[in-house]
Image 1: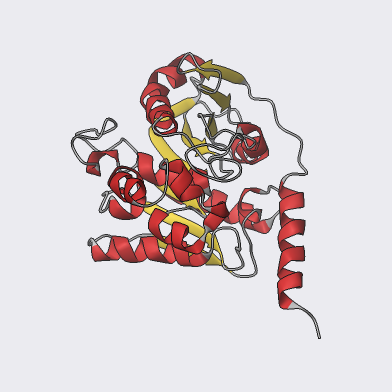
Image 2: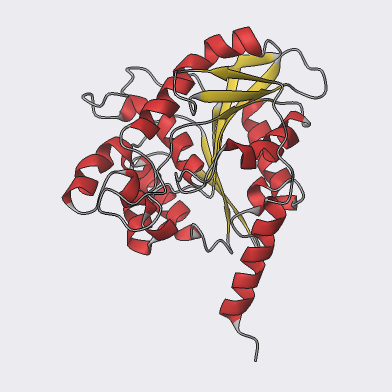
Amino acid sequence: MPDPDRAAAARDEAEEASAFSHPAVPPDVTAAYGDHPDQVVDFYAPRDGSTAAPLVVALHGGAWRAPYDRKHLSPFCDFLARRGFAVANVEYRRGSSVPHQGAEGSVAGRWPETFDDVAAAFDALPGLVADRLPTADARRTVLTGHSAGGHLALWLASRHVLPADAPWFTPAPPALRGVVALAPIADLGLAEELGVCGGASAQLLGGKGALFEERRPWADPALLLPTGIATTLVQGRRDTTVPFAVAEAYADAAAGAGEVVGVTFLQEVGHFPLIDPAADACAVVAEEIAQLAW
């Protein structure tokens, strides 16, 4: 009799191998938004020659861990550029491979630097786009992100809902057409309960227990609702990296706050096809972005 767990593991391995098989695509231009080497944005111009293309701001995943950087998302960014979008691929500081903060193994994220960086990058983008990517129309900006990057995309769209004493609080909502979050770690509490990415959610916030709960109101998208920003989650039903229950929990939290969040569940799809240009799921993602951008 076939072993379903073994079959699922084999499928996941094949999907991940396909997503990571594409060579990194060099950007058209790179700009710094700070002094740290990780504080940079790679820009991809629309391949169809558009002069007022919607801007997609992309945030890569990898459990907020240092070994995973923006380069693995570059084929996806190029895929979007070939669909007529201007794309900004944001880098940010991630965790160290050296255990600290009482965690075991590779540590996810840095507190507060990971949040400092994505907030600073987003705030700097209008100026950087005007200077480095004049073919982009920053007035039609859509945020997207995969996995841990999906968390950061949802978080960026909720800074106006943060507690007023949070350093990243903004009094007004961001100028966005919307957010398309791809298999996002959208509920840090549930993700920690499920052990998503080896306890990465607690590592991101600097530790478990009281510290985790203390910082969640500043960091957990499921607690920062309603945003008033059009939001869609795209999630594979076969995802074993970030189970679809996490997306469902976020959508339920939004509904409880009086907000409707779109959720597109893809059958027989795991975690990585969403950013794999060779996968049908990637075309679905591009269409979800287009629906918000145009």
